[in-house]
Image (cartoon, rainbow, N blue to C red):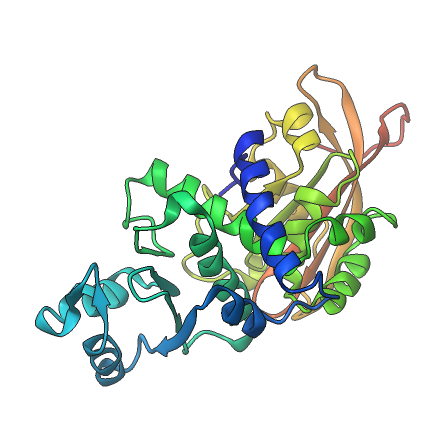
Length: 311
């Protein structure tokens, strides 16, 4: 799944809302404290469990949605959470965020910021959104989730502060890891933000996948949709938009080893742009034992006769 490109006007409007929050916090140093963000926005946070039906019933029996007590119809949210595998919920009627406590703690921070994004974007108010494509028609849902993701990223990475630091060095997964530690966010969310905003005008692409080596793939691996996420920088999308996700995945399969964790490999490969001209990219992949993170960035136009992988 590729990242959605937002309109300039939308980006400017969301930037304005995030700027209000950061100014309200006194323009803090990283990492931003989401507890203080909730206090500023008068938001409450709670938890539910997708594996504990009694906790779901207890949690939702105390809630109101659109002024109606959920206790009268407990399946409104309980069944939705269980059947749609929601990661988080934003309940504007309650000014409340609910997180799935069964998710790894590291993912709570991003999911909470995502729901805060729904709260601070004015045109999202009045709609209860969860992380599922079935809450709205797919096209509308995809755009609104992309908007909330953008707001979350701007908040967690302190907007322009991250851009300044991300463009201060040559791209690499080691650099992304250092930014991850500095801003207090997961390496996956940092990699996403790095590609979208820290590219410095350079074509960059990132892939989030399962282990790419054939001997390490899960049984539900789908060769037609091998990537969980494919994140393209605006320059990459403009110049290399014809490159398919399956081709990019084949690129990393070509150099990745079967290690259980850590670096899986690195290689220079060729990608063709919209004009058919070939360019050299540096690709590297790291496996954190849950997902493989790949960063590929433009090095130079191809003029060498040295054989390389071509896609």
